[in-house]
Amino acid sequence: MNEIKTENRDKAFVGSAAGEAVIEINNLQKSFGKQSVLKGVTLQLFNGENLVVLGKSGSGKSVLIKCIVRLLNSDNGIINVLGEDVSKLGSERLGELRQKIGFLFQSGALYDSMTVKENLEFPLKRIRKNLSKKEMEEKIKEVLENVGLSDALNKMPSQLSGGMRKRISLARTIVVDPKIMLYDEPTTGLDPVTSDEISALINDVQKKYKTSSIIITHDMECVRATADRVIMLQDGEVYLEGKLDEFEQSDDLLIKSFFK
Amino acid sequence: MKKLIPSIKIVPNLHKAREWTIQISEKTIAKTEEASTFLTEFADVILFLSRMTKDTFSRNFEFREFLHQCFQIGYKTLPLISVTGTIMGLVLTLQSRPVLVDFGAVSMLPGMVAVSLIREMGPVITALICAGKIGSGMGAELGSMKVTEQIDAMEVSSTNPMKFLVVTRVLAATLMIPLLVLYADALGLLGSWVGANIKGDVTLSLFFAQAFSSIWFIDLIPAVIKTFFFGAVIGVVGCYKGYNAGRGTESVGIAANSAVVLASLLVLIVDMIAVQITDMLIL
Image (cartoon, rainbow over all chains, first blue to last red; front, side, top):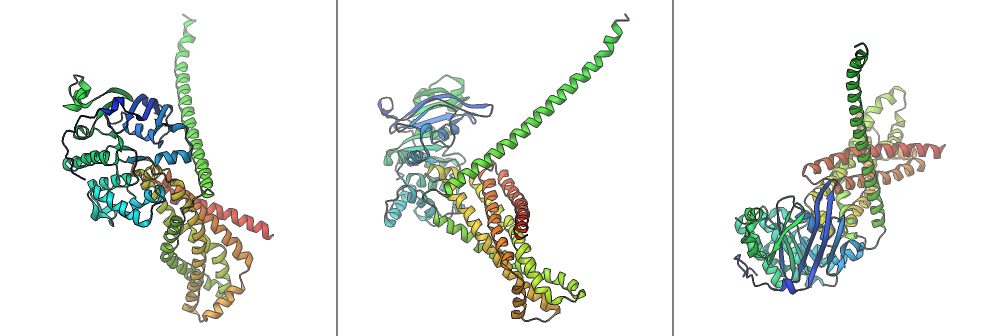
C-alpha cells in the first residue's frame, strides 16, 4: 500500500471545477459565547479531491469539520453533505450519513480500554452488520495491512507510538469504506518521517477507497504532499482559495508566511 | 460666594455615590452571572437525565457492554467490599459489646448488630465506598474519553455514546450496588461473629439464629429498595461529571473529584429521605 512516496503530488487533478460537489458549505457561522469563530465560510469539496484547509491556530479549521459531522451545531448557514442538509437531519438519518464519513481525530481517539482489534471491530459491528465474523476478520486484516501494522492486532493503544496510533486510527476510519474523509491535523506532533508516511497514507486511501477528503493542517509538507486544492482560513473567513501553485506563487504576506 | 460653599461640599458625596453605584452594578453583574451559571448547569442536568431516560428505553440496548460494566462494577469491587464489610461488623461488635455487658444484655448483641447493619450501616457505608471507587472511576474514565475525543469518535462512528457509555453504566450501578450491599451485610455479620468470639464464645449457627430472629421484612425491604437509588445516584453523578468534563486534562481530575463529593452527598440525602419515608410507612 505504501507505494506512493511523499513527493509533490501529481497535480493533474482536474475534476474539482467540473466534478460533483460532495460537501457544499454556504455562509457557515459559529460562535462560542461572544467569540465568533466562523463568520460566514463558504466552500465546496468535489468528488475525489483532497481539499486542504490551512490556517493559523484558532482560525476555526477544526470547528469547521466538526460542524460538517454535527459534532458542533452551526449557528447559521447551510452544510450540505452528499445531498443532505446536515442541520435538518434527525438523529437516525444523521447516524446513517455519518456512516459515510470518516473522521480522523487529532489525538487519534483510539478507545483506550480496547485492543487494536476491538477498536477496529467497534465501528464494523455497528455499521457493517451484515458481515460474518470471518469477513470482519478479513476486513480488519486488510486495513491493518494497508496501514502497515498487521502485527499490532492484539496490542493496546497504550503500547503504540504516536505514529502507530494515527495509523490505527486511520485504519479504524477506513474499515467501514467511507465516501468522505475528514482529517483533523493528521501529522501534528509526529516526527518528519512519520508525518511523510501519514501523508502518503492519506493519498493511498484516496486512491484505493476513492474518497473525497478535507485535510485540516498547518504542516506545509503535508499540504504539498496531499493537496489538490487549498483553502486558507483567517479569522473565521475564507482568505484565499485555489490550487497549491497559486498559493506558492502568491505575494500576499500572510500566505508567504506559511509557504516560505 | 456663600452660595458656592454648599455645592463644594456636595462634590465628595457625588464621588462616593458614583463609587457605590459602580460597586452595586459590579455585584449585580457578578450575582447575575452566578445565577446564569447555576441555571445553565441545572438545564444541563435536566437535559442529561431526559436524554439518558429516553435512550434507556430505546431500541438496540448495548447488552454486552452492560454485562461488561456489571463485571467491572460488581465483581471488581468485591475485594474492597469484602474487607470493609467484615471490618464494619467486627468493629461494631467490639464497640457495642462492653455497653451491652454493662446492661447484662450480651445476648442481644447479634440482633442489634444485624439490625444496625442491614437497616443503615451496610447500605450507607457500602454506598459511600462505591461512590468513592465507582463514581470516581466513571468520572475519570468518561472525563478522559471526553478530553481525548473518544466520545466524539464514538458519535461520528454512528454509535450513541449516551446509550453505550452512560445508560449501561447507570443500569449496571443500579443493579450491582444492591447486590454488593447484601454481600457486605453478610460479611458484616460474619465479622460480627468473629468479634463476638474474641471475648466470648458463641457458635456460628447460634449467632446467626439470634441475628435473623431480630430481623423482619420491614428491616430488609426498605433497606434494599434504597440501595437501588444509591446505585442510580452514583451512576448518574459519575457519568454526568465525566460526560460533561471540560477539554483540558485538569478537568479529568475535577470530574473524578466532584463525582465522589456529589455522589457521597446525594447518597446521604437519599438515605435521609428513605429513612423518613420508611418511618412514615411503619407508623
